[in-house]
Length: 298
Image (cartoon, rainbow, N blue to C red; front, side, top):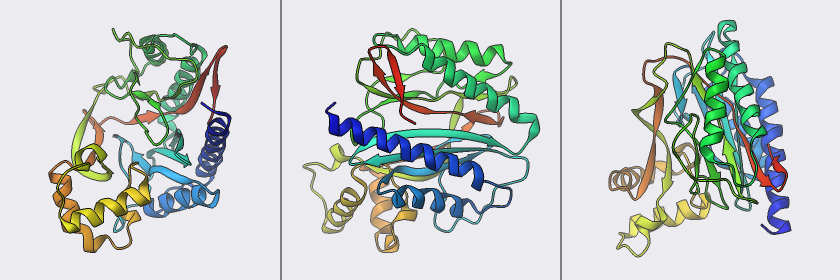
């Protein structure tokens, strides 16, 4: 990575960290979820960057991929467990970070467990380390504290304009033989649930986050309406995930958008929930692998 790219990446990380810290002071029982997302995304844009994906607000058993729609009226419930996952894109260089905030004293140890697992995992990062070794550390840490890792959620490699770029970093020990490489950027994100949970997530029918599938629209015959939608989505979102909440004129595109989702030209992310309905906590940092280990960017 060139010096300019690394500078952008570090600044994206600093912005993500500042916004994450602001979230700690904003979240409260009764707060509108749309208002929370709009505030955090607005803070990113105030810093001269773009959200790399819609702010995810996942509550209790909801583990990932939920952002409110424009007409959302829900609020932060009492005694809830709130995961806030934010991404910052600066000229396509992405930093991804997440925290869990507990309004339930009984779940604070679950939050502490994922935070500790994240720090322990980062300690073993170095060039050539097996991704499965990191997963083993996360699993061992969480189990030692009486919790279950979510085995089918993973961390991921990040490249420019690409949030999920190749290598996955598991949250359990696996037979995976992929190794982390010097100079590459990765998001490490332990997810955990209680000991009576299934330790895995399943897809719900709800989808509020989308991404234009560039490969599936490239060199394909599109209607004039489809072309207009594709051009708008690519120009505004750089091929990264988006939500229809961000499109003020969405009503005029609603039908064609729905059609392109059904045909797979627009990818939709299903909201993921813990299989047994148990609460899930998450912690996440973006790191870059260095000769001596790694640099935490967020």
